Length: 83
Image 1 (cartoon, helix red, strand yellow):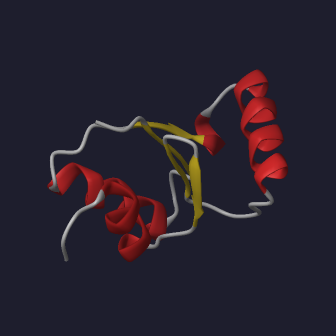
Image 2 (cartoon, rainbow, N blue to C red):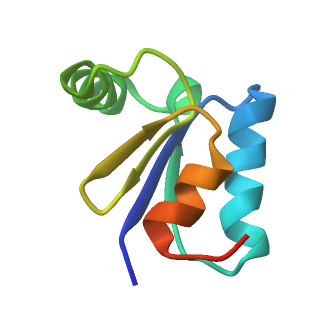
Image 3 (cartoon, rainbow, N blue to C red):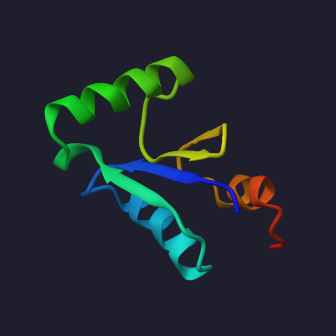
């Protein structure tokens, strides 16, 4: 199973939809709400997003593939799931 990491904002509806996508399918993932994280964690997330050229949330990493935004078709493709 791929390692999935999601960075989100606690108030973002698209971030909630991304979390729901993985949860409804029983796909394990870890997430951090950027706006609720400590300063050190926010700095780490910002550096990772800057390096990937991603400027908004949600930020989803599936193994070493990056998806910026709520893009369920891309999540399915990277996970080898059917629609």
